[in-house]
Image 1 (cartoon, rainbow, N blue to C red):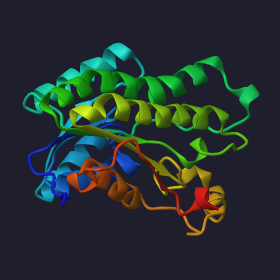
Image 2 (image 1 turned 90 degrees about the vertical axis):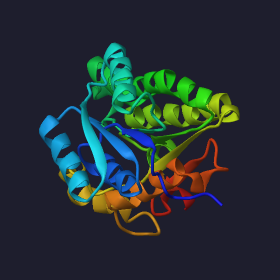
Image 3 (image 1 turned 90 degrees about the horizontal axis):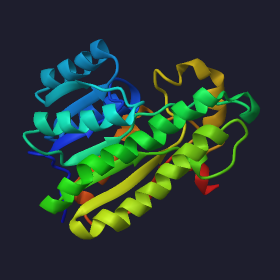
Length: 250
C-alpha cells in the first residue's frame, strides 16, 4: 500500500505565498517534504516559510516571475540547486483568474492568462519531468478549475486556459508515466482565499449551486493535491480529480 509520507522528497509549489498554494506548501512540509515556496511576493513567501519552519517543517522561499519562459526555466534550475540536485514533486498552482465578457478582454490580458496558466506549467514540466523520469520516480499535480469542465458566461479566457492544463495533464501522463512520473490534476470549485475575497456574496452564490452548498477552504484543496503527490496515489495517472463540492456532478 502507498503512503502519504513525503519524507525526503523535494517539492516545488508555485503560487505558494497565499491561498491554495500556501496551504499545500504547509501540508506537504507537514508530511515530510522539503518545500520550495515559489511566488512573487517575498514578504508573504518568507512568512509562509517561517510558519512551516515554526511547525518543524523544512522550506525555502524562491522568488518567481512566471510570465516569461526564460524566467520559468531559470526558476526550475534554481529549484534543482536548492533541492540538492533534484525536484521530486511539482505542484503547478500559480495562475490568474480574470472573469468578464470576451469582448472586453485586452490582448495583454489574454497573453498574461495563457503565459501564467499554460506556458509556465509547460516550461516547468519540460525542465523538471525528464530528470524525474531518469530517476524513475516523480509526481506532478496541476491545479485546474471546475469551469474547465463546462461553459460559463464570463469564464471563457480563464476556463479555456485551464482546459488546456487538463489536456496537458493527460498528455504528460502518457509521456512520462511509463517512466515512473505520475501526472494528475485537481479541479477545485469556489475556494475562500485572499484572491477570491473580492467576489463577496458572488462566491457563496456560485458555491450554493453544488451539493456541498459552500465554498471550500484552501486546506481542503491541499489535501487532494497532497494525496495525488504521495505514494498513496501510486496507481493514479492522468486523472482530473474534481474537488468542487459536487458542482460538476449535477
